[in-house]
Length: 305
Image (cartoon, rainbow, N blue to C red):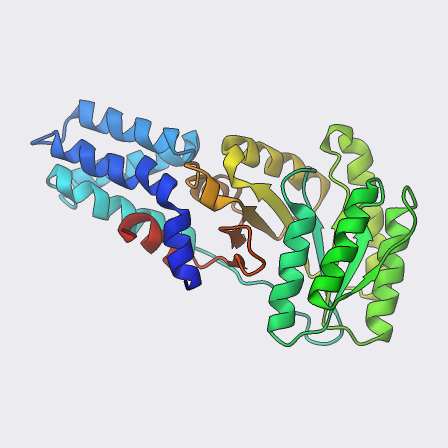
């Protein structure tokens, strides 16, 4: 099964929540009226598109009705598909790669969202692209995270830089950057702690990691990716807002899209946070994390049967 087919399959629950409900809704109405629009609004909110994004989409629908772009209930689905596709593709951005030297990717997120696994899958992806990869175990507060990263390093043939548990995360990041430069590594992926409940400590820790990285490579980290769990819906957006206070996030990795009816959160993240979703995960397999392609997502959401 190719990745697009996995994406279509993975979005089944979300499609049932959005697309198929819209299809059933329009069958029940001969004309567009306030009741129809109220039900449409409820469908979008229940799919975790987000209140603000839903308001904007409903405003676009009402304008579309006035401009005669929407004339019948059947026109609603293609109109929304087009608007959501435009929203997702606007200012979409691919992962930045350094012009020379290692590309440093800092990976952040609360514990439990699949952060370390995501790093392993990213390592696998870049190895498949022919890149040399190094991993840095800077989540030093969990021995399990260090051990897990070691396992991923073995699986993906990537060197792992680690210190003892409870050592200084910035020291691990510093050693990793020095080693990546010395060994001419293409991609350096740095794991970090995800203790959002101690936000002030987390902010200081991330700032310190950034400082030590920039001493060696001034324009690094080239990416700061926030890993979010799609199954948490609006909580994922709340987490993203908190992390933007702690670090300059360049993009989001959205995991577990295949296990949720809340895939509309992709739309909410893009619209409410002006933050691109750069990677999506639609399965447990090592190959089930891939760059996010907005057009494919919109197509799989509205056409994938």
